[in-house]
Length: 353
Ligand code: CUA
Figure 1 (cartoon, rainbow, N blue to C red):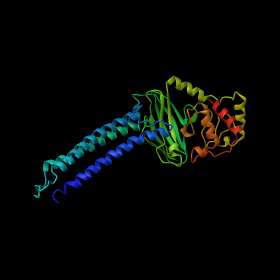
Figure 2: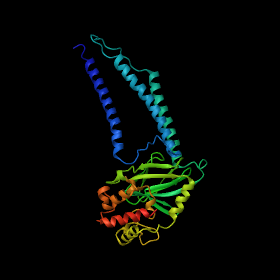
Figure 3: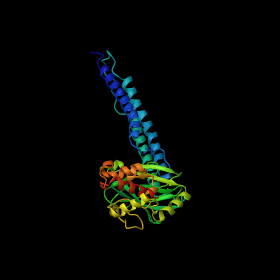
Figure 4: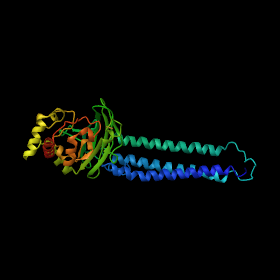
């Protein structure tokens, strides 16, 4: 009976260690499994590509360092106490009884208070940075209206007269002010390398801003549960050099390309005679529906169907065959298109560069 107090403690500690090791193993093994399954890359908020996300990442790093120090000190003291002052075999004496220690109490009151106040002030400063871009550093600005739909993002460039979807094209080195709203439910615009999560509400305009330091594709994800295909509501921010961006603007401002070959011409007929024009717009044509994405330059985008697929012939074909089958909850219905119609539409839509 004498040795018994040690055994349960040791057993509990061993069990705890085993559980921690197992959890860590499961997490380490699960990450690549998930990464293989989904097509889009999984960028990290700790790998910032602009000043907005850099402010968030640096605050996180400070919190991480402080939290790690606190964790190691507190857990270390607990472990030391548990081992050093544990009940020994054949020791039946009472431990020394103490009450109160003014110095220790002052220390463990002031120290946490200081940490909390420091983090509070730093969080306020970060909020300030995120609320308003520093125009003394980046004087050039532009505005894009970002509108959430189930399940894709619409982008309107009011100063440039451009409406597009899914790919948000921006110039590098310029502050891009984003005015967020939604036509249906609450969505959340999140591109981890460029900004923090910002909600997009119906009937309310929310604000955030992004700025990309270098050209590239920055992937993101709707971060507010918004329906069956919430997980399929993705974002791609395509950052171009200012020159490339100007070229993109000129291309987007131009009217739609006229279909060159017979198949694409046939596709144009299918498009304008069918249900497509009720939901989609192609500038300068009879198609002026507003429910679905503007398709005037759909062929120039990198992704399709709210960023679910890369914009390839095969994926477009798959999408047109039965949208709700590949994207649950898709508002675009299965139009029961024939093979010939799908071939023609694919050729036409791909020609809209
Ligand atoms: Cu939109 Cu989740």
